[in-house]
Length: 384
Image 1: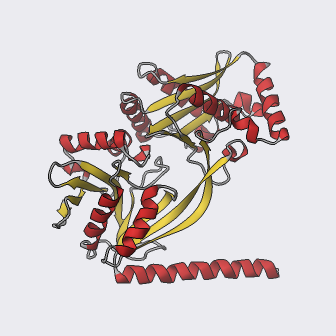
Image 2: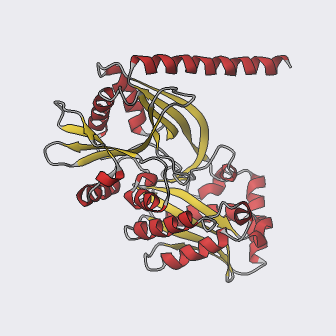
Image 3: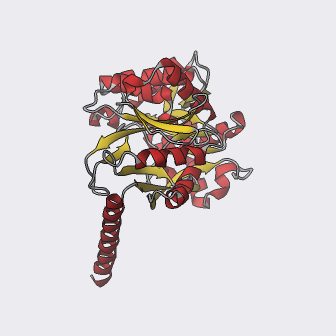
């Protein structure tokens, strides 16, 4: 499947299948992941490769990779599926690789290489119009610098591409750089502070409360098994959504955590009450950010909201023990329980890169129809 565009740029973008990734390229991918300007652990080889190894797919994914023609340096990578049509673009195009565990989309891009990567990407996509009319990006962090840069370059590259972005919802995060000295509590209402103190006291009555961050690679496997057992003990087990519910998920998470632990890119946190674990979570590290992956809690302590208490303790401990971390992304929806305690927000949206006149026209028509539908719905609500 390998395809490459011949051009004058010193960078070239190619489309590869997983079978075409050799050991040398995978090692360059690992290095890019360590040095990327765009934090995203869900595009790490330590995440993607275990997933591909342990999941069954009806269609091979497409890797878009950008390398320097002279020395082979990898400056950008993205993972996609070919799709015939969606509501947003009813033409053949690319969408991010379907992985139910990947909570953020986009690219990994090397430090200082965003303009070069995007220019190469646009040139490549322009030559693929017979196969792909564009790329659709759901679950996109709009504040990432490549998003604004792609909007500018798509309009000015002379090819006639367009990149439209639409905000969808605000997701809770913690901006550790601007967090006040007293921590999260300073941003809470008096009633919220009272509620959190009451819940913590409820745990103290059941036993000594302790928060742990397991970061050492040799201790993470045992902590992971404790997490898996906890997550599989309540409602997630009943719904069949826990990681232990499916063999594929079980094998994936063990391999993924093992791979990332060897690079110090994952840790497991535990809120303990005596010998019990009230809540536990798997947290992934990319760049200078932490991304929440999975959390489980002991229903025996449900009245004390152990998940909320876990997340407040997590912020405090990251601030004290991981000083290079600048942000914690909850990877949560707009209605998440984290909204109650995490004060900051990032905008999550949708992006649509169109690289042909037909795709741009279709996208604009559908965008206008969605705006009209939204306006009409608002008008009906006003009249009713």
